[in-house]
Length: 93
Image 1: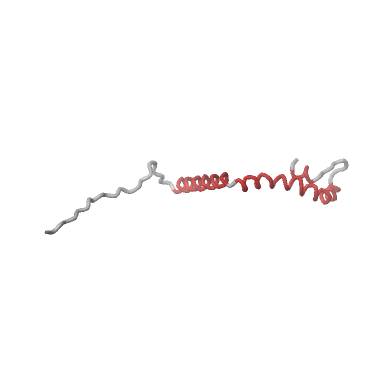
Image 2: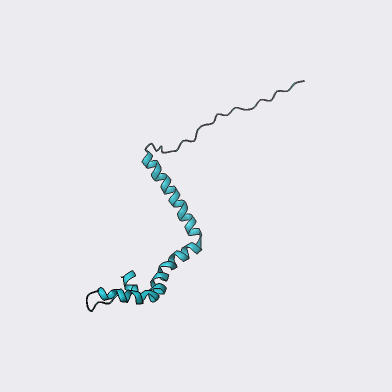
C-alpha cells in the first residue's frame, strides 16, 4: 500500500506599493520622512531627553549668564557710550 502526499501549490504575488514611486527624489523624500517620523516617536517616548532638551537653553541663559556676565561687560567697553550689554541680553535679546 502506497500513499502519495500532494501539497497545494500557491503562487506568490510580489508586494507592490499602492502608489508606485518612480522618481528617485520622491523615493528618497519618502525614506527621509519615514526615518524622521521614527526618530520623533523615539524622542517623544524618552521623557529624559525631552526634559533635558528643554532645560539646556535655560541652563545657558541663567546659570552661564550669571557666570559670564563679567567677561561680557569687559567686552562691552567697545559699545557706544550709554549702552549696556549683559550675557542674558546677548543670548536672549
